[in-house]
Length: 126
Image 1 (spheres, rainbow, N blue to C red):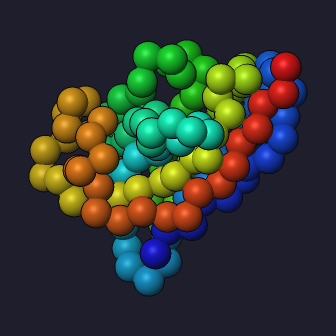
Image 2: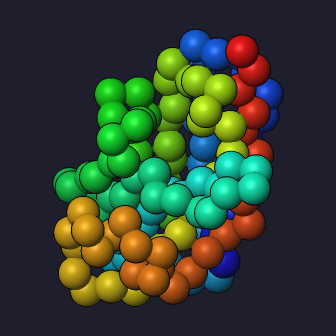
Image 3: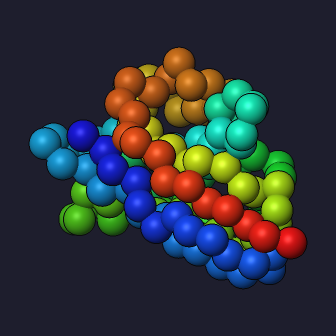
C-alpha cells in the first residue's frame, strides 16, 4: 500500500514536499514515480526514480524545480517542489513500477506501474 501526503495550498513561488510512504510490502527494489492529474484532465507523468535512487527522469515542465528522491530505509519516496506555479495545481499520485525496464519512455507510461496510492491535492494560488 502506498500513501501520498504533504499536499496543501501554497502561493506561487512557494515550496512543498510530498511524501509517499509504503506499507504492507517493501518497495525498495521497485522503481517509483509521481504522476499528477489536474481538474478535468488526464493523469500525467511528473518524475520517476530507480530502485536505488541513482537515476531519475522528469517531465520537462518541472525540470529544475522538482526533485524526486527516496529513502529505502524508511520505505518512503519524496517529491520536493520548489518555485511552484498555478499550473502545478493537481492531485499528485505516487506509484511503484512493475516494469523491468527503466527508461524515460517506459517510466513515463502509467502502464509501467502496478501499485498506486491515493493522491494528495496540491493547490497553487497566483
